[in-house]
Length: 233
Ligand code: C5P
Image 1 (cartoon, rainbow, N blue to C red):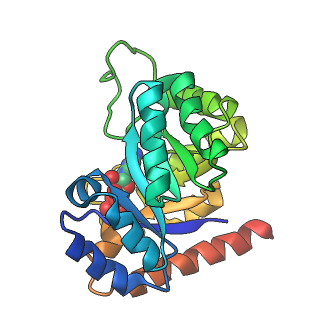
Image 2: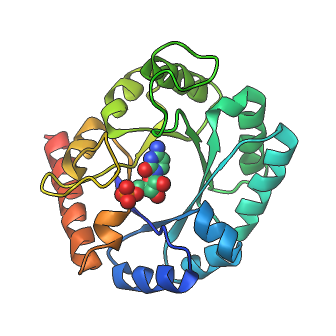
C-alpha cells in the first residue's frame, strides 16, 4: 500500500484549488483540516471529490459519543473517505464513530489520533509517564475497538505495527533528507516511512510551498515505489 496525502493547509478555498489543480493526476489524496473546513464548509469536500481526489477530513473529533456519532454521519454525507477522532475520547466514543460507518456500509475509514505531536513530556495534565508509552497503550486500545487506523510519527510505526498489526498507520512529518524540517521535529524521509510500515504519508509544506509541487509529489511517489519494491524483496 502506502499512498501520498497532500495537506492543503490554506485559509482560502481558491488557494487550495489552485494547488490541487497542480498535483491532479499525481496525488491520490488531499487532506482538509479544520482551518479550511471551518472557513468553507462541507461543500469543499464535494469539490475535491469532483476533481478526482480521495478526501481525508482531519477534524480530530472529541465529544460525547452521541455528538461524535452525528458529526461522523455528517462527514460521511459530505463525502469524506477518511476522518480523524481523538482516541482519548475513549471506547464508547470511538465505537459510536465506527458504528456509523458500519451501519451506513460506507467505505469511510476512521483514524484515531494518539498523542498530539505538539505535546512535550510532562505537559499532559494528570499524566506523569512517558508519552511513547501512552501512544502504545492507545494503539492497543484502538486495535481492540476495531479502529481502521492511527495517526502517528513515522518513528513510532514499527512499534505500533508489532503490537497492533491490524491498524493502518498514517504519518505526517515527512521530509527529504536535504529538506529543512520547518517546525516538525520528529521527521522521516518518504522511503524510510514506507520501509517502517507506514500506510499513508501526509505531506504539506514540502509540496505546497514548492515552485513545482507536481515534481516534488512525483519524487515522493518514486521513493514510495522504491521502498515498496525493497520491502517485498
Ligand atoms: O507541512 P507539513 O508537511 O509539516 O504538514 C503536515 C500536516 O500533518 C499538517 O497538516 C499538520 O497539521 C498535520 N499533522 C502533523 N502532526 C500530527 C498530526 C497532523 O503534522 N501529529
